[in-house]
Length: 173
Image (cartoon, rainbow, N blue to C red):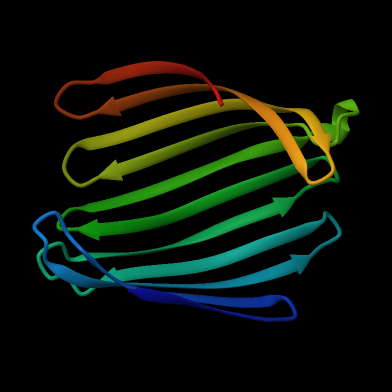
């Protein structure tokens, strides 16, 4: 059981969520989340700036966190994003990510898109994860209200803990 409330006035938005759920042991608890956003029109283009937080009533998990999220158009074809935050659920994690996406207008196919991103998670103790991603999305067709596309994705992951681990992944979706 739960609910979401959304309020938007001009360039300001507020979204709140409350839901009751249960953990793996069957214990019920409440989950709360709040996001405040602002849309800003700049000479570069439109940007979305959000601050969010979340928490639970589950004392054994002690889950809570907060962060900021920014999406900003740099030109009509190019945009950038950045995310920073922290999470605590017994242990603490800090994270950050950023990247650039290019709209298909750049090469004459407006519904296509390509991008590159980098993310870093610093976990409590001596553990961290670095992820790099390249992707390209191509629209296959569009007819009336139906569109289909294919995304090619490449990821590099490096996890540092007691033993360093790396991997590369390629995917199609």
